[in-house]
Image 1 (cartoon, one colour):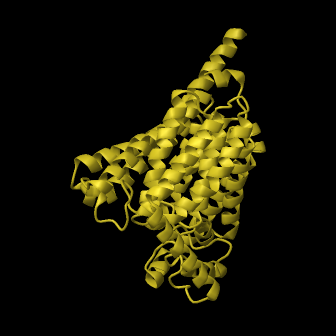
Image 2: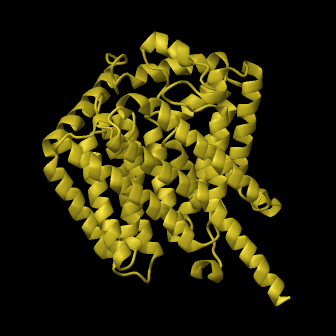
Image 3: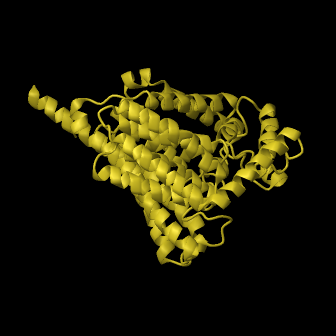
Length: 428
């Protein structure tokens, strides 16, 4: 009987490790794209085709991993009590119904150019990244996923900061703002929000070399975030960092040195403010002017870089089809013609327009339930993941989901789902 239990535990461990494969593959693909940008000058033109293809192939491979662990992923007891996952399942059902009603166009299935998120990708994000990440049993493997994300971000940030002072990466040129391997500065900002928050948690809660790695990673990425100059992403990270530090110090009672990590983070933040003082003040003044323009009603067309106008137009379209929406990317042509931008730059509004208000509500409730579950966890990996996911979610209310950043959000949501670990899992 004991041998049978050991064999069962071994199988569960292997399945748990397979469940981590999609997250590691996504990190590897991001690094591969960075290497291509460095090594191939022509990638400045071809990256808009190569990068989406690499990520879609990773999604397919992730679905294969999910199929190998289907017995663990579709667990009756788990599905019954995990309200967050149930909300996401219902959200996908709403998305499928909306797609059937509005038609299986190329854009609906594969996404429009540049964003490349179709109904297939939304399903793969949930199955290959969120569900698989929630099925990782070993605490050390879960921690390695976070470290892999930090390592990828460190590599990108190092090249990004070097390129600011000494431009040498051709693929980083010809973009609106400093964006590194990504297509736009804001998109890089979304990724940096994740890296900054995860590294802060590692800096506070880690031990020995891991804490040092977290501190170095935090410093590197927070400087990159300031140099990126995405005020919305800076605010998103700032909103999460303080409660994160408090929660981690309270949860990790045995790790008194966590206070040292907190002071290190504060010192690095002060250093960043001093370094980029003039730029940050300039951006802050711009935000205040936008807010004043909105309150006086004279800045709807330009406030928030045109986001308010986008939101108002999208809301009017949602009123016309509140139940099933227009299908995936069904409003992109109208928005592009009216505003010059193809997306509402608010993820909840986007899903409401695509799949209907019920779908948007289910998505939002699913995210909130998962985040609350992570915050209440005693597992520090879950806390770090849910804090980073919360930061991304805040930034997504002012930004656009992209094929290369959205999967990381779902990975973090998956890691947030795991609230209890057995002693054996903690030791593995």
